[in-house]
Image 1: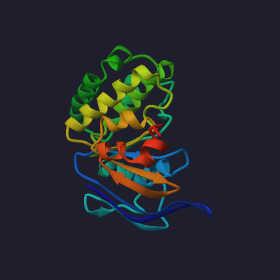
Image 2: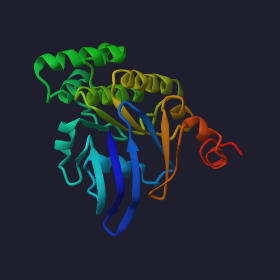
Image 3: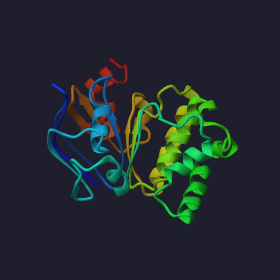
Image 4: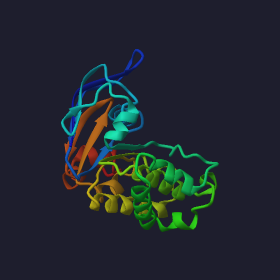
Length: 234
């Protein structure tokens, strides 16, 4: 579904991604792991068109999307949930969700909204409440739900567990499982490596803007370097 080849990205004179190549299969759940500042967020921003590579190629369903404007990439079927959620805090939960479906017909929007509320029943309870008054976990549900209202083919999630109470982690990751079961492809950037490994089929590890390791979760869990650096096991 997504093919990235020899991509280089810079912020001014500072290069953040170096000859990065990776792929994402259709209907796959994939994790991008790495330390803070490794380039994970820059990678997602590059896929969604917010960063433009200085060189390299990104193909989504066979079409090169380098240089395509972000709103057009969204229309093509890529939804990006940024770290920090970026909700409209003074708008209601319902208004935030419906805004995400502005590319759909009213009938499609109603059907998608019904599905989103079935994924996150708590949002139906909070539907008329302002998004800014919700807990961190509930706000993350709104951010996920708003992206899903686009009916994307590829969902990019940047640190969905940031700021959440531990009890909320299974809620968010179980929702990711349900999203994948609906046929969506999911790429998740995550610091909670052990939790991510429970819900993805493959993972890449980025260090200093470069892919250093790729593999299945079960293999990475047995990799001494991964165990030491990311799982806290010597």
